[in-house]
Image 1 (cartoon, rainbow, N blue to C red):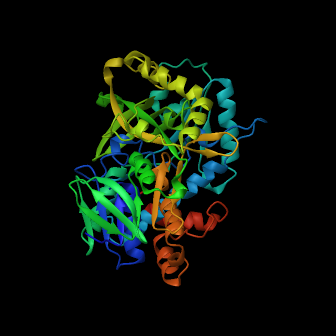
Image 2: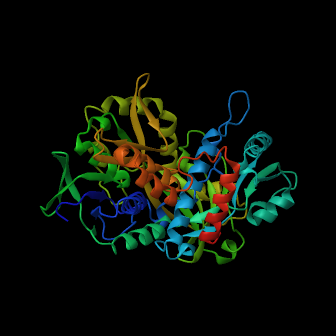
Image 3: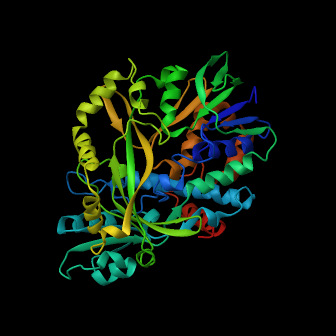
Length: 484
């Protein structure tokens, strides 16, 4: 389209979610989706490029830090859990409306577990369980230090263990495994069937500039389009495009790329013995995306078993990117923050260097912390996705490295983007609601949009952390619709 109302750069889960929401809120909007690769969901949303955990803070220990006094803080876990529940409510709505035709193709029941060894870690997990189960969000969480019970939950964890070894685990049976690539394909397949929605593959935005009240986008091949609203949902490529836009709100942002790798099991007998997502504690200095987990995946109806991720370093901002991505992103406005963040994160740098030097046997040794009988020949290394962690200005430290995601939007609402990584896709609906609030504030205040939002996202405006009845009712409805 030459003059679409909305242009979505990147055909991943964020653009797909925003596109579906906008067309439901305003069916008259014309939408152009632009994707640099030859297919949809080829980068961060691809099933092999993320953990597919359905991050609900049920098992990820980095979301529940331990304070200096020994207490466990659950506020971040509760917020993420609420956001994932909201995402599931939205998916359930789309199933009921026929937008999602096959929920079983992208979401599967899969218990979420945390697993630790050693007395100090056992005590931490016990305190975490006690703190979390005080909230109705986590009341179904079980805790055990008994070898027999842990072995019942996840048999591989008990192979070749001494009966005297101190172990502890928690388990939430109602966890999920999510194939965000398949979900994205279903959403975009629905969108492109609608009038005034177009998808351009193998098309790259080479320049982005102001054009009156809107934006001019130059594409490779020389074509130019103009759009009233632009959303940059391009994963790691979002930062360079944000910098091109020149909006003041994007100044000072930098990005630190971290690559990931997983060991994948090739032995069906081992795969069949494990049916859970088991998360442990991260190594000292490890980024949150590198929390080790022994992870059941269901992709295209086929069950797999992965362990990792092992962090690495590449200057690329996308798997399909350039080795010059990091260097090209350094600008006068973000040089100070990037240098300051680098200086303050030397343990992370050291960790990444050590990770890059690991041999296959080293990686399998880490796996053997979870599965003692793992044999090197049963596992092979695969490359997962690139993640670009946020570096931003800080009044005290000049610049800081931030994990998670952040919405950056122009003050006039004409452009918005999402920077950062995990929990990302699992909280897509809350992230996109933030985009709508920043970019369509007037419309979001209207009775018409409020009514339609209440249909799509029934928890919008509610606090599921305090409203136990709404949490239970909406959760049950979503589980039924999604086949969970």
